[in-house]
Image (spheres, rainbow, N blue to C red):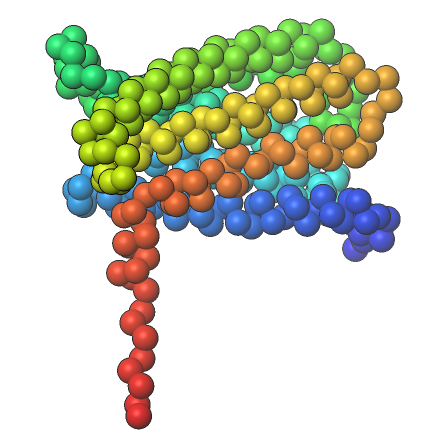
Length: 303
């Protein structure tokens, strides 16, 4: 067994991080696949579909690709299988992971902007945008795929597998800086749209409380519930992105590499893709209704 020595040399810290990564991969992959199939079914059958279903299906697809690339790579690496890919295989996985990460941030940004426009007040110039917005979703998908496939193309060209020396460090650093500002642009858009939605929801809450009184709890509109879901997703993503950026800066500027910091950084790379589907499931009543309808009825008591 060529990799048996790796398992023997694993200490308790490596075992802990291996379990955490395996847990994220084992939970996140099937749930994302379920969400992808569920929203595809909703859209195809026409059972009360809405435009956000298409965007959530695309987000589940991006999360699935992230878990199938970086998830498998980090899971096997955490358990000692560190030399199972050659240079080409390493480049392909890293390229697909970067493309999927770009699709993820573009999709969340699209979902955020779409929901912000949806809950906007009924001003006449918003009405025209709301009417045209659903037709822009599929072209936005295609554009995000094309842009991310092209913008990440240079990264695998100048990269080498961990077993080889890197002779293009300055080029790689320039690419990483460019990708950082590219991601930061979308984070800024998401933060702006989320702040706008918070203001709209706050104004809506004050109006509803004024109409119904403080003692009555008015029924939450589906648009408001969807907006809160999007704000939660964006908040989680921005917090994890900020943590990832700070940790990456610390690791780059450290004189000596800390295995503990490196492993903790790798663990959080999968956190959003693994656990964001649970936020979507918790806020979508149709999924809970689907589970209740599909679950087998209890057997009657023979007595």
